[in-house]
Length: 265
Image 1: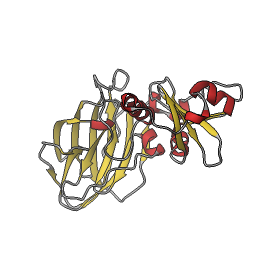
Image 2 (image 1 turned 90 degrees about the vertical axis):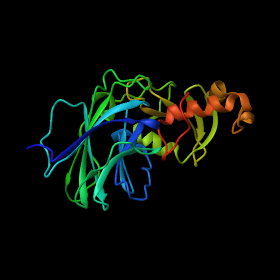
Image 3 (image 1 turned 180 degrees about the horizontal axis):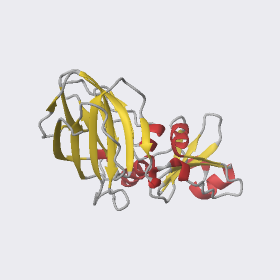
Image 4 (image 1 turned 180 degrees about the vertical axis):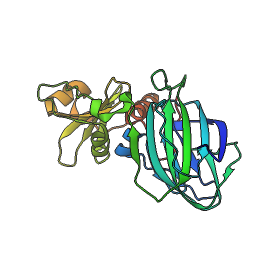
């Protein structure tokens, strides 16, 4: 079995993402919540977002199949999601809009999108190295699912790295979603201090692993002040010279947000 249509393209993975889209839909980008970040796939109105290792141009092959294609073992990370195509065309896009590649004509229907990523072992943010194949076929709508985890993105392989004797740590998607309910207090490099709604203090940081797994560690007041200075200074944005640095640092810790984000350096 072969695809009925295919196109090869190079797409700018701005903000660590690109989209397979209905080009005539009113796009609404993925929320990129914790689970979406872990799975590297997110669903929005008129599109499916693919999370990438690179913040650069990446090779993408878009294929349309009459039926579900066979799984190929030669790919690192494989995820699936559903896309409704009403216009009769499907194309590629990014946070900046539709890509230059001419959209492929298809029957209006709901499609399953299988994203297969390769080259992740050597890929970097600015030098890229990752590539993607997108396979679409008509199928009923279903929840996103990971078919094959790349070890570097597999949350089951993430290890807590507590920095205090108490060592209460939350990892990955749970850490990201818990942090979203908290109030920012202070920053230091790649780590940031937050206060939870119950008043407890948490440090949000990125583990030094390939996936940049978020880690949220509870701190007592004395340890938080040792790391971030007196509590009287918490919650105040730094002066102009430090704002950009803090924003970029927080962005790299949180990895992605909804739709557009501050540009990389």
